[in-house]
Image (cartoon, rainbow, N blue to C red; front, top):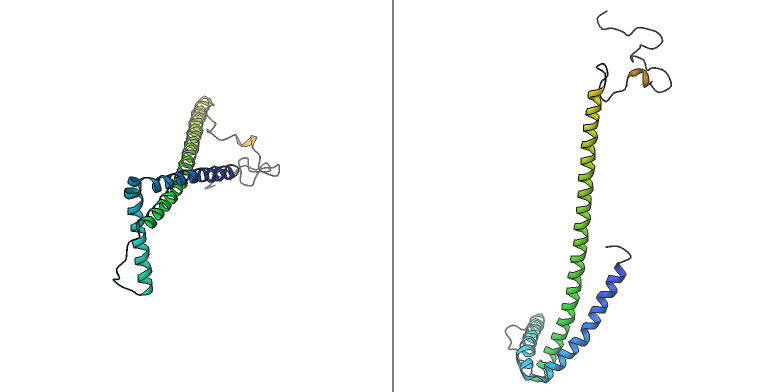
Length: 179
């Protein structure tokens, strides 16, 4: 992620979560007012949450197999509405994270595609240069090796010829093996 864009993304995520809070409050109010919503949407998760929470607490205190009384309807409706509101806020936050992840992977994929295209272009240029070099080498006179300059045009470092190089140095004939 670009460093300059991170605070903006964080701000947008925070804004989305803040906007989801009034939505959650409205749903909670609807859950308290509607008997259907209360009975089928709020009560079952609240009772399950209460059962799991109390079971865990009882086990931590060492009580095994103790019966757990369900919450009364009013407390369960309140807890269920609260759970639903928090689930909505959590869901909006998760959605924001997913969208940011998708955006980042899309950017990374585009960057990789651009790099692959640039690499292909460099490879094509290299191939064209090789073809041009081969064509130029074919046009050279027969005594020249392709890719090498003549020895007289490339002196050794220091201005003179290197010992043992073509020309033999200071007017000496090159040493011939076997003579």
